Image (tube, rainbow, N blue to C red; front, side, top):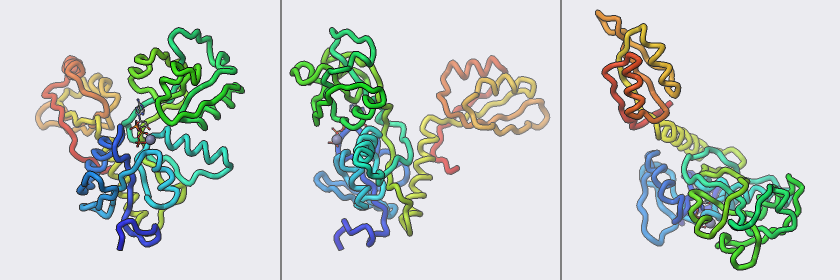
Length: 304
Ligand code: ATP
Ligand code: ZN
């Protein structure tokens, strides 16, 4: 049997990720942290999952929503920008989108922004009227303009949007921005944000059926666990009962701590799962508030 079997014949889950690009390494890392493993060879698009019945499809990011829609894959890791553009395309055609965002994954952060040449005066969105805006996200831009009753010309480009003003193709660009270095290198200035983006887990609009439903649920639980512990640490310390309120005030990002009395003293052992960074400065503040024997431990796995 060919590994790329028809959807109905499959009881393994198939997840599509970007073959190469900004999201491919972090997507692989996330899946490995979830206990998946596979062997890759350079030109293979299909990777058989060796630890779970979950296989990988390595594709271009733009193809992922369509592959989910066709049932060729069950889940995908893709930028919200790609998903939102294709969703807006469905809406423009009066079709319900066959895919949806399931979980935001916390990497690949960027913004879809309008940017103008540095020398161009910007007095607010009204100054877009009548201009040409170059973008690879025509549906999102069209919707954003319509919501503001603005009329501008959308110049649809599949790449190199940032050089459109210099080439005389447009006065304004609408493109993805992360550090802003590409804009600055092209003498462009960001002026408006259309969409906050990051990588997301995408799946079909309809619920899964059969064995794939259980696998998808298992993978989602593991992804939740991995995301929750990403910046989390376990803090152990001791504090006198009277000092406890002051110590806990310094731990606003902690889940309800476990408190254990220490025999023969007025001290409590405190164990708290903190979701923010525990810096040296924070440890010193905790010590001043009355905590002692402070220990910060990394978390390996979490299953809520
Ligand atoms: P493919 O060959 O798969 O079509 P691509 O060139 O479309 O690749 P990349 O440039 O690798 O895609 O970007 C993938 C995703 O990374 C984007 O869709 C976006 O969600 C995210 N991203 C984060 N920062 C940026 C950025 N500065 N520019 C572009 N994309 C970014
Ligand atoms: Zn792409």
